[in-house]
Each structure stands twice: as structure tokens, then as C-alpha cells.
Image (cartoon, rainbow, N blue to C red; front, side, top):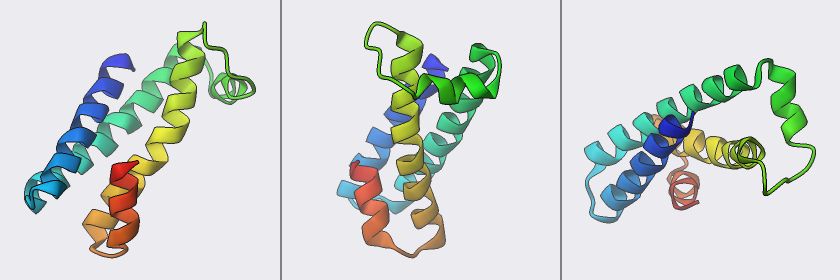
Amino acid sequence: YLYLGGLAGASSLLAAGADATARPALARTAKLGAAGAISLSLVALVHDLGRPARFLNMLRVVKPTSPMNLGSWLLAGYAPLTMAAAAADVAGRYRVVGAAATAG
């Protein structure tokens, strides 16, 4: 899940740069790549935790000394933004929301 999370983050930065330089095809590809990578990262993290209930259990507290806990929190905040950015770009609607999600 660490590799896929890094891939998603890099794709998001590439998408933001493509949006800033008016390259819509690259931006769409990067946003979809980020959404796919973060989805697979979520699956890999839940698999690593052993069962889905443990993912929710990780969100009870913030524990800076636990990489799994911080990864769960980062994933819970980043994944919805990535999905919103990709969905807005594919749908061609809510461009302001998609731009804010990409910036986030």
C-alpha cells in the first residue's frame, strides 16, 4: 500500500501540474491513475490489517508513532478528494469542485 500511495500522490501532482499548464488529456489520465492507485492502496492496506473492521478501528485515534495508523488517516482524507477530482473530470461537470479536490 505504500508504493501505491506514492504512485497516487505522484499522479495527483502530475494532474495538478497538467491542469495548471492547460493539458487536459494528461490531467485526466493522471487523475484516473491516482484514483485507481489509491483504490488499490486501500485494498492493500485492509488486507495488511487482516480484516476491514481494523481499518475503522485505526481511525479511532491518531497515533503518530504508528505508520499504519497514519497511513489509515492519510488514506481516509486523500482518497475521497482523489475520487472527486477524477469523477468531476470524467463527468465534465462541477469543475470548481474538481479543481478544489485536485488542489486538496
